[in-house]
Image (cartoon, rainbow, N blue to C red):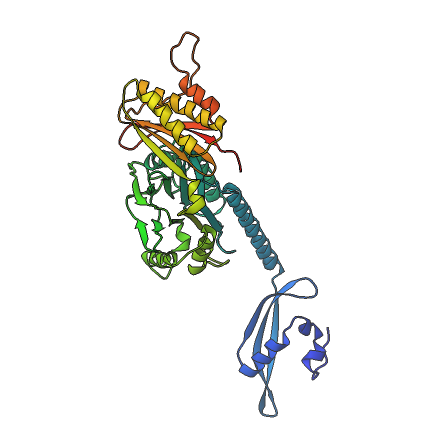
Length: 460
Protein backbone atom coordinates (compact mmCIF):
# COMPACT_ATOMS: atom_id res chain seq x y z
CA UNK A 1 0.00 0.00 0.00
CA UNK A 2 0.97 3.68 -0.17
CA UNK A 3 3.58 4.94 2.27
CA UNK A 4 3.92 8.68 3.07
CA UNK A 5 7.33 9.88 1.89
CA UNK A 6 9.53 11.60 4.43
CA UNK A 7 7.96 10.08 7.54
CA UNK A 8 9.99 8.20 10.12
CA UNK A 9 10.19 4.54 9.12
CA UNK A 10 9.00 3.43 12.57
CA UNK A 11 5.72 5.32 11.98
CA UNK A 12 5.32 4.67 8.26
CA UNK A 13 6.20 0.96 8.40
CA UNK A 14 4.84 -0.41 11.71
CA UNK A 15 4.99 -3.98 10.39
CA UNK A 16 8.79 -3.75 10.39
CA UNK A 17 8.70 -2.95 14.09
CA UNK A 18 6.69 -6.12 14.73
CA UNK A 19 9.40 -8.07 12.89
CA UNK A 20 12.16 -6.43 14.96
CA UNK A 21 13.92 -5.07 11.86
CA UNK A 22 14.68 -1.50 12.99
CA UNK A 23 17.87 -2.33 14.97
CA UNK A 24 19.11 -4.11 11.85
CA UNK A 25 18.27 -1.08 9.66
CA UNK A 26 20.21 1.18 12.03
CA UNK A 27 23.24 -1.11 11.79
CA UNK A 28 23.10 -1.12 7.99
CA UNK A 29 22.76 2.68 7.81
CA UNK A 30 25.66 3.27 10.18
CA UNK A 31 28.04 0.66 8.78
CA UNK A 32 27.16 0.91 5.11
CA UNK A 33 27.22 -2.90 4.88
CA UNK A 34 24.34 -5.21 3.92
CA UNK A 35 22.74 -7.51 6.50
CA UNK A 36 20.41 -10.50 6.18
CA UNK A 37 17.78 -11.80 8.59
CA UNK A 38 16.89 -15.39 7.73
CA UNK A 39 13.47 -17.03 7.98
CA UNK A 40 11.69 -14.59 10.28
CA UNK A 41 7.98 -15.31 10.82
CA UNK A 42 5.72 -12.33 10.02
CA UNK A 43 2.33 -11.52 11.64
CA UNK A 44 0.57 -12.92 8.56
CA UNK A 45 1.91 -16.37 9.50
CA UNK A 46 4.34 -16.63 6.59
CA UNK A 47 8.13 -16.69 6.84
CA UNK A 48 10.46 -14.28 5.07
CA UNK A 49 14.16 -13.74 4.63
CA UNK A 50 14.96 -10.01 4.78
CA UNK A 51 17.96 -8.54 2.98
CA UNK A 52 18.81 -4.96 4.02
CA UNK A 53 21.17 -3.15 1.63
CA UNK A 54 22.56 0.40 1.99
CA UNK A 55 21.74 2.78 -0.90
CA UNK A 56 22.85 6.34 -1.64
CA UNK A 57 20.54 8.85 -3.37
CA UNK A 58 21.85 12.22 -4.72
CA UNK A 59 20.28 15.26 -3.00
CA UNK A 60 21.53 18.82 -3.48
CA UNK A 61 24.90 17.49 -4.57
CA UNK A 62 25.32 15.39 -1.43
CA UNK A 63 24.68 11.68 -0.96
CA UNK A 64 21.78 10.79 1.37
CA UNK A 65 22.19 7.30 2.74
CA UNK A 66 19.13 5.01 2.97
CA UNK A 67 18.35 1.30 3.27
CA UNK A 68 16.63 -0.94 0.74
CA UNK A 69 14.62 -3.74 2.39
CA UNK A 70 13.96 -6.80 0.22
CA UNK A 71 11.75 -9.64 1.56
CA UNK A 72 11.77 -13.15 0.09
CA UNK A 73 8.92 -15.52 0.95
CA UNK A 74 10.55 -18.71 2.29
CA UNK A 75 7.50 -20.20 4.02
CA UNK A 76 7.70 -23.53 2.15
CA UNK A 77 11.39 -23.94 2.98
CA UNK A 78 10.86 -23.01 6.62
CA UNK A 79 7.98 -25.44 7.06
CA UNK A 80 9.96 -28.23 5.38
CA UNK A 81 12.93 -27.55 7.67
CA UNK A 82 10.64 -27.55 10.73
CA UNK A 83 9.13 -30.89 9.66
CA UNK A 84 12.61 -32.33 9.19
CA UNK A 85 13.74 -31.15 12.62
CA UNK A 86 10.60 -32.58 14.22
CA UNK A 87 11.15 -35.91 12.44
CA UNK A 88 14.78 -36.05 13.57
CA UNK A 89 13.74 -35.17 17.10
CA UNK A 90 11.11 -37.94 17.16
CA UNK A 91 13.59 -40.44 15.73
CA UNK A 92 16.17 -39.55 18.36
CA UNK A 93 13.58 -39.72 21.14
CA UNK A 94 12.58 -43.17 19.85
CA UNK A 95 16.21 -44.32 19.82
CA UNK A 96 16.87 -42.95 23.31
CA UNK A 97 13.71 -44.60 24.64
CA UNK A 98 14.70 -47.89 23.03
CA UNK A 99 18.24 -47.56 24.35
CA UNK A 100 17.15 -46.86 27.90
CA UNK A 101 14.53 -49.64 27.86
CA UNK A 102 17.18 -52.15 26.79
CA UNK A 103 19.59 -51.16 29.55
CA UNK A 104 19.02 -52.73 32.99
CA UNK A 105 16.34 -50.76 34.80
CA UNK A 106 17.84 -51.81 38.12
CA UNK A 107 21.28 -53.31 38.65
CA UNK A 108 21.57 -56.66 40.38
CA UNK A 109 23.23 -56.35 43.78
CA UNK A 110 25.94 -58.96 44.41
CA UNK A 111 26.71 -59.99 47.98
CA UNK A 112 30.40 -59.14 47.77
CA UNK A 113 30.41 -56.10 45.51
CA UNK A 114 28.89 -52.64 45.49
CA UNK A 115 28.02 -51.46 41.99
CA UNK A 116 26.68 -48.37 40.24
CA UNK A 117 26.33 -47.34 36.61
CA UNK A 118 25.38 -44.29 34.59
CA UNK A 119 24.43 -43.66 30.97
CA UNK A 120 24.45 -40.30 29.16
CA UNK A 121 23.13 -40.17 25.57
CA UNK A 122 24.84 -37.82 23.11
CA UNK A 123 23.62 -34.23 22.74
CA UNK A 124 20.54 -33.21 20.80
CA UNK A 125 22.45 -33.00 17.52
CA UNK A 126 23.94 -36.52 17.89
CA UNK A 127 22.00 -39.69 17.17
CA UNK A 128 21.99 -42.12 20.09
CA UNK A 129 24.59 -44.90 19.99
CA UNK A 130 24.76 -48.50 21.16
CA UNK A 131 26.50 -48.30 24.56
CA UNK A 132 25.39 -50.84 27.16
CA UNK A 133 26.37 -52.36 30.51
CA UNK A 134 25.12 -55.13 32.79
CA UNK A 135 25.71 -56.88 36.12
CA UNK A 136 24.84 -60.60 36.26
CA UNK A 137 24.96 -62.73 39.42
CA UNK A 138 26.22 -66.19 38.43
CA UNK A 139 25.53 -68.02 41.69
CA UNK A 140 28.05 -69.47 44.09
CA UNK A 141 29.10 -65.92 45.02
CA UNK A 142 30.44 -65.05 41.56
CA UNK A 143 29.42 -62.00 39.51
CA UNK A 144 29.75 -61.19 35.80
CA UNK A 145 30.19 -57.57 34.70
CA UNK A 146 29.96 -56.42 31.11
CA UNK A 147 30.19 -53.19 29.15
CA UNK A 148 30.09 -52.71 25.39
CA UNK A 149 29.66 -50.29 22.54
CA UNK A 150 28.01 -50.94 19.17
CA UNK A 151 29.53 -48.74 16.47
CA UNK A 152 27.11 -46.53 14.58
CA UNK A 153 24.11 -44.41 15.51
CA UNK A 154 20.36 -44.47 15.72
CA UNK A 155 17.69 -47.10 16.23
CA UNK A 156 19.68 -49.78 14.39
CA UNK A 157 22.66 -49.51 16.75
CA UNK A 158 20.34 -49.58 19.78
CA UNK A 159 18.54 -52.66 18.44
CA UNK A 160 21.80 -54.54 17.85
CA UNK A 161 22.92 -53.54 21.33
CA UNK A 162 19.74 -55.05 22.79
CA UNK A 163 20.34 -58.36 21.01
CA UNK A 164 23.96 -58.54 22.18
CA UNK A 165 23.03 -57.70 25.78
CA UNK A 166 20.36 -60.41 25.82
CA UNK A 167 22.84 -62.91 24.37
CA UNK A 168 25.44 -62.03 27.01
CA UNK A 169 22.94 -62.75 29.77
CA UNK A 170 22.09 -66.11 28.18
CA UNK A 171 25.75 -67.09 27.70
CA UNK A 172 26.56 -65.97 31.25
CA UNK A 173 24.14 -68.61 32.58
CA UNK A 174 26.43 -71.25 31.08
CA UNK A 175 29.09 -70.01 33.55
CA UNK A 176 31.84 -70.12 30.93
CA UNK A 177 35.24 -68.38 31.16
CA UNK A 178 35.19 -64.80 29.80
CA UNK A 179 37.04 -65.61 26.58
CA UNK A 180 34.56 -68.38 25.70
CA UNK A 181 31.63 -66.00 26.23
CA UNK A 182 33.24 -63.50 23.83
CA UNK A 183 33.89 -66.29 21.34
CA UNK A 184 30.18 -67.14 21.28
CA UNK A 185 29.25 -63.46 21.15
CA UNK A 186 31.58 -62.87 18.20
CA UNK A 187 29.80 -65.50 16.12
CA UNK A 188 26.40 -64.11 17.03
CA UNK A 189 27.44 -60.53 16.15
CA UNK A 190 28.39 -61.71 12.67
CA UNK A 191 25.00 -63.35 12.22
CA UNK A 192 23.07 -60.31 13.46
CA UNK A 193 24.76 -57.90 11.05
CA UNK A 194 28.11 -58.57 9.40
CA UNK A 195 28.58 -54.82 8.86
CA UNK A 196 27.94 -53.87 12.50
CA UNK A 197 31.05 -53.84 14.71
CA UNK A 198 30.93 -53.81 18.50
CA UNK A 199 33.49 -53.73 21.31
CA UNK A 200 32.96 -55.45 24.65
CA UNK A 201 34.61 -56.36 27.96
CA UNK A 202 33.28 -59.33 29.93
CA UNK A 203 34.66 -59.87 33.43
CA UNK A 204 33.97 -62.29 36.31
CA UNK A 205 34.60 -61.58 39.98
CA UNK A 206 35.08 -64.50 42.36
CA UNK A 207 35.36 -63.38 46.00
CA UNK A 208 37.41 -66.47 46.84
CA UNK A 209 40.11 -65.51 44.33
CA UNK A 210 40.35 -61.75 44.97
CA UNK A 211 40.81 -61.13 41.25
CA UNK A 212 38.86 -59.91 38.24
CA UNK A 213 39.14 -62.36 35.32
CA UNK A 214 38.26 -60.69 32.03
CA UNK A 215 38.38 -60.85 28.24
CA UNK A 216 38.24 -57.86 25.90
CA UNK A 217 37.04 -57.60 22.31
CA UNK A 218 38.62 -54.36 21.15
CA UNK A 219 37.40 -52.42 24.18
CA UNK A 220 39.17 -49.87 26.36
CA UNK A 221 41.13 -51.19 29.37
CA UNK A 222 39.55 -51.74 32.78
CA UNK A 223 40.99 -49.41 35.44
CA UNK A 224 41.48 -50.67 39.02
CA UNK A 225 42.28 -48.42 41.98
CA UNK A 226 43.61 -50.09 45.13
CA UNK A 227 42.97 -48.90 48.70
CA UNK A 228 46.07 -46.66 48.55
CA UNK A 229 44.93 -44.81 45.42
CA UNK A 230 47.27 -46.52 42.92
CA UNK A 231 45.57 -47.12 39.56
CA UNK A 232 46.40 -50.03 37.23
CA UNK A 233 45.29 -50.71 33.66
CA UNK A 234 44.12 -54.17 32.63
CA UNK A 235 45.63 -53.75 29.16
CA UNK A 236 46.22 -57.32 28.02
CA UNK A 237 44.97 -59.45 26.44
CA UNK A 238 42.75 -57.59 23.96
CA UNK A 239 41.30 -59.18 20.82
CA UNK A 240 39.59 -57.52 17.84
CA UNK A 241 36.00 -56.20 18.06
CA UNK A 242 33.00 -58.50 17.91
CA UNK A 243 31.77 -59.36 14.45
CA UNK A 244 35.21 -59.65 12.84
CA UNK A 245 35.38 -63.46 13.21
CA UNK A 246 38.34 -65.81 12.99
CA UNK A 247 39.99 -64.76 16.27
CA UNK A 248 40.59 -66.86 19.37
CA UNK A 249 40.00 -64.67 22.43
CA UNK A 250 41.93 -65.20 25.65
CA UNK A 251 41.30 -64.30 29.28
CA UNK A 252 43.48 -62.22 31.58
CA UNK A 253 43.18 -61.21 35.22
CA UNK A 254 43.87 -58.28 37.51
CA UNK A 255 43.88 -58.09 41.31
CA UNK A 256 40.74 -56.76 42.98
CA UNK A 257 41.58 -56.93 46.67
CA UNK A 258 39.29 -55.67 49.46
CA UNK A 259 39.20 -51.88 49.32
CA UNK A 260 39.67 -51.79 45.52
CA UNK A 261 37.52 -50.02 42.93
CA UNK A 262 37.25 -51.01 39.25
CA UNK A 263 35.87 -48.88 36.41
CA UNK A 264 34.52 -50.12 33.07
CA UNK A 265 33.60 -47.41 30.54
CA UNK A 266 32.96 -46.63 26.88
CA UNK A 267 35.00 -44.38 24.59
CA UNK A 268 32.66 -41.40 24.97
CA UNK A 269 34.13 -40.82 28.42
CA UNK A 270 37.75 -40.46 27.27
CA UNK A 271 37.80 -39.81 23.51
CA UNK A 272 38.12 -36.22 22.28
CA UNK A 273 38.71 -34.94 18.76
CA UNK A 274 41.55 -32.65 19.78
CA UNK A 275 43.62 -35.12 21.84
CA UNK A 276 45.07 -38.61 21.73
CA UNK A 277 43.01 -41.45 23.24
CA UNK A 278 45.82 -42.38 25.65
CA UNK A 279 45.71 -38.84 27.05
CA UNK A 280 42.02 -39.25 27.79
CA UNK A 281 42.63 -42.58 29.58
CA UNK A 282 45.51 -41.06 31.55
CA UNK A 283 43.24 -38.18 32.64
CA UNK A 284 40.65 -40.73 33.75
CA UNK A 285 43.32 -42.57 35.76
CA UNK A 286 44.23 -39.33 37.55
CA UNK A 287 40.58 -38.63 38.33
CA UNK A 288 40.07 -42.19 39.62
CA UNK A 289 43.17 -42.08 41.83
CA UNK A 290 41.63 -39.27 43.87
CA UNK A 291 38.03 -40.50 43.76
CA UNK A 292 36.56 -41.82 46.99
CA UNK A 293 33.07 -42.56 48.25
CA UNK A 294 30.31 -44.85 47.04
CA UNK A 295 30.28 -46.27 43.48
CA UNK A 296 27.56 -43.77 42.48
CA UNK A 297 29.60 -40.85 43.82
CA UNK A 298 32.64 -42.07 41.87
CA UNK A 299 30.51 -42.50 38.72
CA UNK A 300 29.30 -38.91 38.91
CA UNK A 301 32.76 -37.57 39.68
CA UNK A 302 34.39 -39.33 36.73
CA UNK A 303 31.70 -38.05 34.37
CA UNK A 304 32.16 -34.47 35.60
CA UNK A 305 35.96 -34.63 35.47
CA UNK A 306 35.80 -35.83 31.85
CA UNK A 307 33.75 -32.79 30.85
CA UNK A 308 30.62 -34.69 29.83
CA UNK A 309 27.77 -32.18 29.34
CA UNK A 310 24.18 -32.50 28.04
CA UNK A 311 25.39 -31.49 24.55
CA UNK A 312 28.27 -34.01 24.55
CA UNK A 313 28.77 -35.42 21.04
CA UNK A 314 28.95 -39.12 22.03
CA UNK A 315 27.19 -41.57 24.30
CA UNK A 316 28.83 -42.34 27.65
CA UNK A 317 28.38 -45.46 29.79
CA UNK A 318 30.27 -46.03 33.05
CA UNK A 319 30.14 -49.05 35.40
CA UNK A 320 31.87 -48.81 38.79
CA UNK A 321 32.32 -51.72 41.20
CA UNK A 322 33.88 -51.82 44.65
CA UNK A 323 35.14 -54.76 46.67
CA UNK A 324 34.63 -53.29 50.15
CA UNK A 325 37.06 -53.91 52.98
CA UNK A 326 34.82 -55.09 55.79
CA UNK A 327 35.66 -54.72 59.46
CA UNK A 328 34.07 -55.43 62.81
CA UNK A 329 30.50 -56.70 62.92
CA UNK A 330 30.16 -56.49 59.14
CA UNK A 331 33.18 -58.77 58.65
CA UNK A 332 31.55 -61.35 60.95
CA UNK A 333 28.78 -61.79 58.36
CA UNK A 334 31.31 -62.78 55.67
CA UNK A 335 33.17 -65.99 56.51
CA UNK A 336 35.07 -68.74 54.66
CA UNK A 337 36.08 -72.27 55.63
CA UNK A 338 37.75 -74.94 53.47
CA UNK A 339 38.75 -78.61 53.78
CA UNK A 340 41.00 -80.67 51.53
CA UNK A 341 39.25 -83.98 50.82
CA UNK A 342 41.26 -87.18 50.67
CA UNK A 343 39.83 -90.26 48.98
CA UNK A 344 38.56 -93.22 50.94
CA UNK A 345 35.55 -94.21 52.97
CA UNK A 346 36.38 -91.70 55.70
CA UNK A 347 36.14 -88.64 53.40
CA UNK A 348 32.35 -88.31 53.49
CA UNK A 349 31.88 -88.53 57.30
CA UNK A 350 34.86 -86.23 57.77
CA UNK A 351 33.28 -83.66 55.45
CA UNK A 352 29.94 -83.90 57.28
CA UNK A 353 31.64 -83.40 60.64
CA UNK A 354 33.59 -80.44 59.30
CA UNK A 355 30.45 -78.80 57.85
CA UNK A 356 28.51 -79.41 61.06
CA UNK A 357 31.22 -77.79 63.19
CA UNK A 358 31.56 -74.76 60.88
CA UNK A 359 27.81 -74.13 60.64
CA UNK A 360 27.47 -74.46 64.41
CA UNK A 361 30.25 -71.90 64.95
CA UNK A 362 28.48 -69.57 62.52
CA UNK A 363 25.37 -69.86 64.71
CA UNK A 364 22.98 -70.95 62.01
CA UNK A 365 19.48 -72.07 63.07
CA UNK A 366 18.98 -75.83 63.43
CA UNK A 367 16.95 -76.32 60.23
CA UNK A 368 19.48 -74.45 58.08
CA UNK A 369 22.36 -76.27 59.82
CA UNK A 370 20.82 -79.66 58.98
CA UNK A 371 20.10 -78.72 55.37
CA UNK A 372 23.67 -77.47 54.97
CA UNK A 373 25.12 -80.72 56.32
CA UNK A 374 22.84 -82.77 54.04
CA UNK A 375 23.83 -80.74 50.96
CA UNK A 376 27.51 -81.09 51.88
CA UNK A 377 27.11 -84.84 52.22
CA UNK A 378 25.45 -85.20 48.81
CA UNK A 379 27.93 -82.96 46.97
CA UNK A 380 30.93 -84.71 48.51
CA UNK A 381 29.50 -88.16 47.82
CA UNK A 382 28.88 -87.16 44.19
CA UNK A 383 32.46 -85.93 43.86
CA UNK A 384 33.91 -89.07 45.48
CA UNK A 385 31.93 -91.30 43.13
CA UNK A 386 32.32 -89.44 39.85
CA UNK A 387 35.29 -87.09 40.33
CA UNK A 388 39.04 -87.37 40.66
CA UNK A 389 41.57 -85.80 43.06
CA UNK A 390 42.36 -83.16 44.12
CA UNK A 391 39.04 -82.58 45.91
CA UNK A 392 38.14 -79.65 48.11
CA UNK A 393 35.13 -78.56 50.16
CA UNK A 394 34.51 -74.86 50.68
CA UNK A 395 31.86 -73.23 52.85
CA UNK A 396 31.15 -69.54 52.56
CA UNK A 397 28.64 -67.27 54.19
CA UNK A 398 27.67 -63.73 53.28
CA UNK A 399 25.11 -61.41 54.83
CA UNK A 400 22.47 -63.00 52.59
CA UNK A 401 23.31 -66.63 51.88
CA UNK A 402 25.24 -69.81 52.68
CA UNK A 403 27.29 -71.21 49.78
CA UNK A 404 28.62 -74.80 49.68
CA UNK A 405 31.06 -75.73 46.92
CA UNK A 406 32.98 -78.92 46.10
CA UNK A 407 35.77 -78.95 43.49
CA UNK A 408 37.56 -81.93 41.95
CA UNK A 409 39.84 -82.76 39.04
CA UNK A 410 37.26 -84.25 36.66
CA UNK A 411 35.70 -81.83 34.14
CA UNK A 412 32.50 -83.81 33.51
CA UNK A 413 29.64 -81.59 34.71
CA UNK A 414 26.79 -83.27 36.62
CA UNK A 415 23.20 -82.84 35.52
CA UNK A 416 19.94 -83.33 37.26
CA UNK A 417 18.02 -86.40 36.07
CA UNK A 418 15.13 -88.55 37.15
CA UNK A 419 16.36 -91.68 38.91
CA UNK A 420 14.40 -94.86 38.25
CA UNK A 421 13.26 -96.96 41.25
CA UNK A 422 15.94 -99.57 40.59
CA UNK A 423 18.84 -97.10 40.16
CA UNK A 424 21.50 -97.09 42.86
CA UNK A 425 22.69 -93.55 42.03
CA UNK A 426 21.49 -90.34 40.41
CA UNK A 427 19.59 -88.89 43.35
CA UNK A 428 22.28 -86.69 44.95
CA UNK A 429 21.95 -83.69 42.64
CA UNK A 430 18.16 -84.02 42.69
CA UNK A 431 18.21 -83.83 46.49
CA UNK A 432 20.49 -80.79 46.44
CA UNK A 433 18.31 -79.05 43.83
CA UNK A 434 15.23 -79.71 45.97
CA UNK A 435 16.51 -78.44 49.32
CA UNK A 436 18.76 -75.56 48.13
CA UNK A 437 17.69 -72.14 46.85
CA UNK A 438 19.95 -72.54 43.83
CA UNK A 439 22.65 -74.84 42.51
CA UNK A 440 25.00 -75.09 39.55
CA UNK A 441 28.31 -76.30 38.20
CA UNK A 442 31.15 -75.00 36.09
CA UNK A 443 34.52 -76.02 34.73
CA UNK A 444 37.49 -74.55 36.56
CA UNK A 445 40.67 -73.08 34.98
CA UNK A 446 43.32 -75.70 34.44
CA UNK A 447 40.81 -78.56 34.33
CA UNK A 448 38.31 -79.93 36.79
CA UNK A 449 34.94 -78.65 37.91
CA UNK A 450 33.14 -76.98 40.79
CA UNK A 451 29.64 -77.97 41.92
CA UNK A 452 27.88 -75.57 44.28
CA UNK A 453 24.59 -74.83 45.98
CA UNK A 454 23.35 -71.94 48.09
CA UNK A 455 20.75 -71.30 50.78
CA UNK A 456 19.16 -67.93 51.45
CA UNK A 457 19.60 -66.81 55.05
CA UNK A 458 16.61 -65.64 57.06
CA UNK A 459 16.38 -61.86 57.25
CA UNK A 460 17.29 -60.47 60.66
